[in-house]
Length: 116
Length: 114
Image (tube, rainbow over all chains, first blue to last red; front, side, top):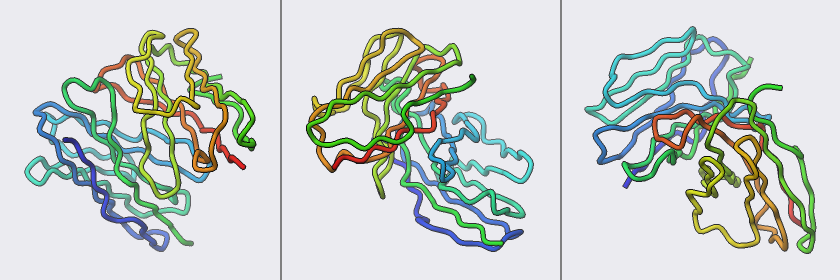
């Protein structure tokens, strides 16, 4: 069965600090997809990144970077030089199994608070 | 408008009321989803429609009734709800009902059942 674990429930940092959000997943599929979403206080989930299981290359987008390691089943997300606007709940998600179409399995989310 | 829109944004209803949530996507997608997000719980998938046909129903109580009249619109009809149904209801869409597709979410409807 698929499962996503975000062990950090809440993280609080001061502006300009770097912060890493952890995501560990479980799946028996050889082909799968991982996602990160951001949910600001307004409620909407904002898509950040999608990664397929065959692409272990790390990705950087501005202050955001993602580290995908199949060996440890992790897909961690780092924010460099955090800003107050980064305050939100961040969700990691895993695509469902072979016969589950577009079903997503979400982690519990990590609430990030960036203080000025 | 662009993206996924939802109305109303906030809704308060009594347990005997009937109301409907509306979702509209302007992305040309063929799959639409309803999720429930309760406090301290992960997102729960409720229903999925692909090409206007329901393809997923995650054991949702019958007091929630979805409707997908076309690929751009999705409704969630509510009747005789319980206080524990209070939550944020999120709509999403994706290009197709395939696992590699990215789902794009609307802003949600915050529902309070009294």
